View (cartoon, rainbow, N blue to C red):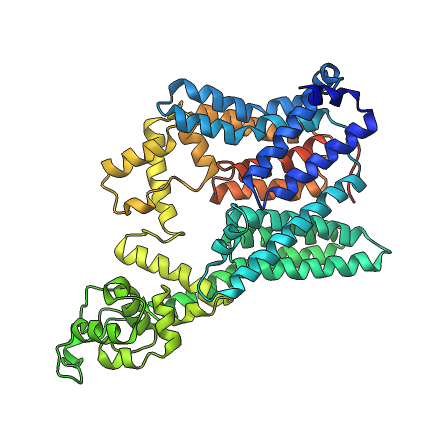
Length: 520
């Protein structure tokens, strides 16, 4: 306590420096450590509360910051009708940045453009370090997934990390364009751009990529606003580009998955070893234009696989093996297994169900996986384990919960509990392992607090934007697009890293700019 009281002896310049340092430390640790995030947020709060001028600071709290904290406060009201207090209290703890950070930043010294630049430099350095570590881990193994490589160096989801990469990229873009003289800085930023772009490509986060495309269009419009004809061209391209993407996806789907089942009466009935083939026409799954249910002799498949594989028995890899052989246009018999080389066998043992997936940097294989998921969903209606299509089931369950709790929701701690009840009641085909909640923050708000609570939260989110005098700055729009869009595809603030990203970047753009600061 004596050390905390000693904080009151610091002069104003020392306090301003420490305050900025703590902001930098919080932002820099987001990609790496929930523990460090918590530690520096606690330090941030203690440093604020033990300020000798705390009373005058409290009187300076901005109206917008107070309104924004309603997002946190409504979580407290949600405790009134929750039945899972343990989960609810943990949820409250996760959401504390939504209360602490906007209040502290709104009462702190306002930052100029140079000071904001320093903060974003440290964000970029942190992102780059994370990219280097994750890329090294990813490159060392042919079978570790990029999201696993990201988690290896700190518990943050690849989607939330993609948000940080986008924030860093487009803030750097501003300083790159604004910089007229410093060539070394321009070259450095160009290198940073290349690294971040390559990583976004390798990361293959659909949310991150879509946000990047949206922000790219916005940035082009923003920086070329004085070039009328270029803006017309860009506007036309913004209409044509999505159409081209759609046509490209339709072409891939038609080429890969839209094939008629061959006439099984004309297919051979026996293998080269005179064992009976099974031609199962009920298995409509396709791998690389071939139906997996055809040319199957499980007796030969099992025997041959157990001869060639030292690490995985047939029963452990059965479905993967069948899919992989189909993708190579091999029959699922002894001859098919013998055609596999050492690389193929290792791929199967490591869970690769299609030989094109070994191309870990291929955009085509990523698109193929997504279209394959939707093909399975259309034909079998079981999206279990498929990250994109099972979200549709999460939404269906979510809407059914909303229907029964429309006005006031289910309470702060009961979202997952209600989901579990609905999964059981509806006899959902989703496997128990994948019975998750909706990946949409807006829907989560409605489920938790009802339509009334949801509208209050939206008001708390929008009101500071409305009253802000310099709300049309480049930074403001960039951050708001990232945060708002991310909540469509992710429960953005349901984790500590997500709540911190949401609160600190929102607060920086809303409550720390000096009055009249308007970049560009």
